[in-house]
Length: 222
Ligand code: TIU
Image (cartoon, rainbow, N blue to C red; front, side, top):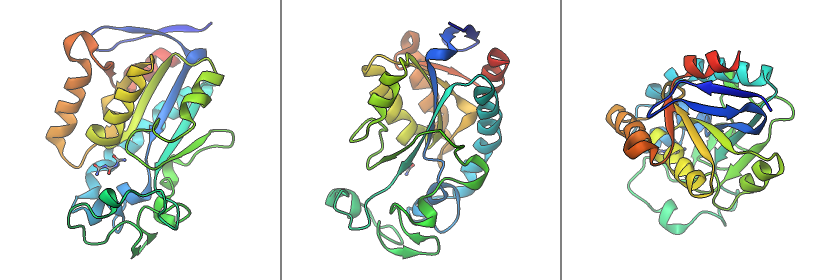
């Protein structure tokens, strides 16, 4: 047991770091860099880069504690057989999922754009979970990975706050995990959605989880 208390809202959260995993959601070039999926949807991708430094600080502290760190990537098989038609045909993007962009085929596994940004690249031994949807539990083995390590708490970081981070936190909450979300380790193409997304998590006594920031997590881990 290695209990520490993280200052958070709506209240401080005590966690056993041996039973806590950091989940880095979709810090992929496709979302953070020009020419990827995020930009094809009409978004200003530079808004997400502010989360990189706080994520790195948190990862450094978590690695020192020997905590489980799991990275996720949203994307599809090259033949798109796992990509729902309703997702591929959605909206009017400048390039659809599977189209050839400057970082390879949009949101396709194995392409440069699908990979995690170099500054947050997974270290040896850190599981990488490929997911076809927004939530990290849907159609993946994330739940098994966490259960096999007796995980009780998740520190959920990544992009985007109101889409893949939120969906994952909701999925995790229903599966019995306590979710702690450091707001500065998350980012959105819509600053107001980021703010409200975080408020939604901690409202009603922490209906989906707890909200904090990277400095508070690092302070609790050192
Ligand atoms: N990872 C993730 O959040 N996927 C998205 O599609 N996000 C958007 O905000 N579009």
